[in-house]
Image 1 (cartoon, rainbow, N blue to C red):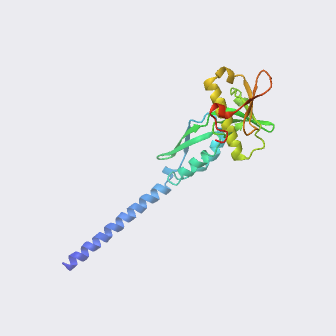
Image 2 (cartoon, rainbow, N blue to C red):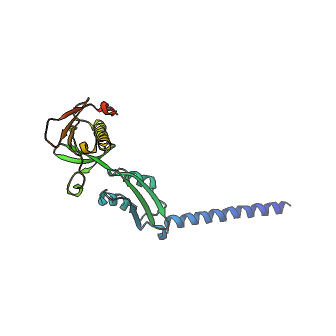
Image 3 (spheres, one colour):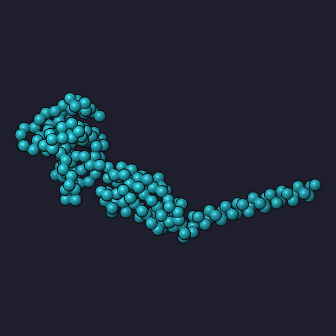
Length: 212
C-alpha cells in the first residue's frame, strides 16, 4: 500500500512536469516562431488621415511577434493622430493586424495667425487647410489666437455648434456666412459674404452655451 502510494505520487509529479513542459514549449513556440511574426498591417476606414502618419505608427509593429504587440498602446498612438476619432485593433492569426479607423468630420475652418485649419465639432484642429481640402467650404472662425489650448477648444466648439445650428435651421443664411469672430466672451461677430458690417449675435439666443 505504501509502495502503491509512492508510485501514484511519482506518477502524479511526472504528469505535472510533462504538462508544464508542454505548456512551456507551446508558449515558446507561440512567442518565438517566425510563423507568428507580424508581416501585414491592414488599415480600413482612413480616407483623410495622412497615410504617412498612420504608417509611422503601425510600422513599429512589423516583424514583431503578433502576441507581443500591445494592441491598446497601438490604438492609443493611432488615436493621437488628429484626424482619427477612434481605432479598433485586432490580431489576425498568424501574421496580420487589422485596424478599423473612424475619422473625425471637419465642420469649420479656424484662422490661427496666418494659417487656416480644418476643425471638427469637438474643437480639434485636424490639419492645415490647403489644396487637398479645396472641396471643404465652411465659415472661418477668427479671433482665437490669444486663447490657450483648452479655451481655444471650447471657443471652436461654440463656433462649430453655431454653424451646425445655422445649417440645420437656416441653410440659405449659413451659405452666406464667411466669418464668425470668437474674440468676445458674450457674443459672436458674424460676417456675411456681402461685405457688410458684422452682426453681433448672442449664443444664448440660439440655446448655445458659450461656456460649454
